Amino acid sequence: EVQLVESGGGLVQPGGSLRLSCAASGFTFSSYWMSWVRQAPGKGLEWVANIKQDGSEKYYVDSVKGRFTISRDNAKNSLYLQMNSLRAEDTAVYYCARQLIIAVAGTPLNWFDPWGQGTLVTVSS
Amino acid sequence: DIQMTQSPSSLSASVGDRVTITCRASQSISSYLNWYQQKPGKAPKLLIYAASSLQSGVPSRFSGSGSGTDFTLTISSLQPEDFATYYCQQSYSTSMYTFGQGTKLEIK
Image 1 (cartoon, rainbow over the protein chains, first blue to last red):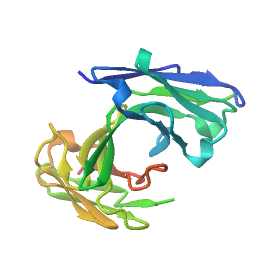
Image 2: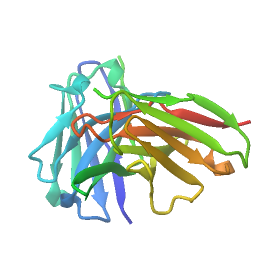
Image 3: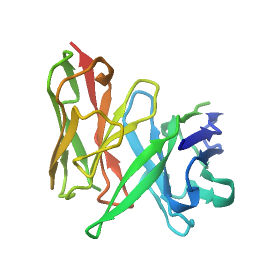
């Protein structure tokens, strides 16, 4: 069974740091792009960052550039999100998600599946 | 950035109803459009990918259509387990994915 399990969330003060982890199982982790997506309480979904299979490409939403770093350890089947200089607006449930990319007639269609259960990050004094 | 706008934001319907949710992109995204279902306290679940392809295991009452800027998610006959929030997501811009604001489907 394909499974993603996040951990590392918690309460942190503004300006603080936190490192999230996502443990993957049931598939060849090193073959997939991976993403972090977050959801503020009562709000919609916001893509945060993603990383290529070998870690050579990383992309971020503008609001976290320079503060968050996505990384992975393929030997440990794990995805990480290092979050620094945290702000109240970073309060959210953070989900990791596998990205499926399939080329159809030269078009790289892609989507998120599956998602982990999420881990809650609360930034508050 | 590509903006995604869903309508309506909320919808009340009855079991057995046919329901349509619309998603509009701020620029053409071809068929780079996915739909997710999220129930309270749970992670999103993929329903439709590439605008109209049904994810394995998803009931056939769900269908997607559209291309370019206008897309729809249709549930042909609502079941009790379908009451949830639905999100569209564009995957055209691979360095900046964006979601619609969500459509909350409630029981009438």
